[in-house]
Length: 211
Image (tube, rainbow, N blue to C red):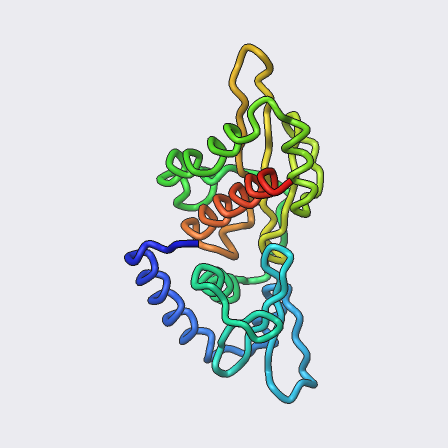
């Protein structure tokens, strides 16, 4: 993924600030709030957390993130991991799906967000509801009872993200929308939630192209 230099500088600043804030915290408590794994018996303090189904390791007191084989994280992934661990407060899921607009400060982003998430997804799968279902299953989606087809994905252990697809048939255009659990604001800022939704739609489109 190519990263705009301005955005990259912003992400680097966020990582530095969030890392500094996490360094003063107890990793066991951070893990408990985030639903991450932590082994107190390990000589080196570290926790493991899943991001889109892939495990990552964060070590203390440095608070550095890496893949399980020690490979460095791409900057957007590292930023998402750090923000998740910092913001996680252990709030339970509310089992209520809402749009970005209904999350704190989300209304400002909603229109643009739909333009780079649901709309391109609906365009890519136009007239191919079964193709959407197949791509969602290949990407680890769990079926939900919404729209003509809907699936839940786990960005983080406590951040589920849903994609709902409506088939317009022959008379109307197809439509798709990304939804979040109402508790999502306890775990990520709205800007990162928008990025996660966009990332999920890109993954589904890529799954179609790779099929």
